[in-house]
Length: 259
Image: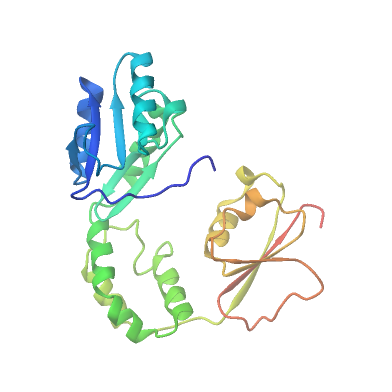
């Protein structure tokens, strides 16, 4: 991973923009859309800056000057000079999906974004807001955090009550909370890998990696595959002790080829 993806709250915050023309106008729209306030270079409160200067040597000089004052800088069309890059965005406020290539190809990021755009329902933001407003009810119904997460995972599954790729509105959350809870017991799944390449993962393997609460894996399974799992999933190198089938949630066993 070449960069750490972060979403920066800009509402009401000063942002330096230097440059003119089409590229500068595009950055201006992006900053204003996020609620940022465009200021000049003299504003000492600004923490990030965009440089949209056509002359590459001049842009590099401006970037160096800004960085010397402790600012994080984005320089249009010069990824080597960027402290951060701006992704292609799918906006279903408050749901944001960002696609980045680390400056390798803005065109590629745009093409991927356009594909995702067609997949995302227009009312996805309504669903997110309804879930936020229902937090107290969620905690009341499932006081235990693990049980609450499992209930949400089941609801978000393909075809589930809150499947995010269905065109669901806020009423879907109310209907789901009114349903009886058919929480399944802990379960175990085994994946026999045919390759140690992450790109060779089947759709089922990728889905289970994203759902698993704990992963028991052969030592040969590379970090690149384990990185496809949730960050909070427990990783355990396979040994004689494989744990109990009664453990809550999903335990995924990953076997390396030939094991």
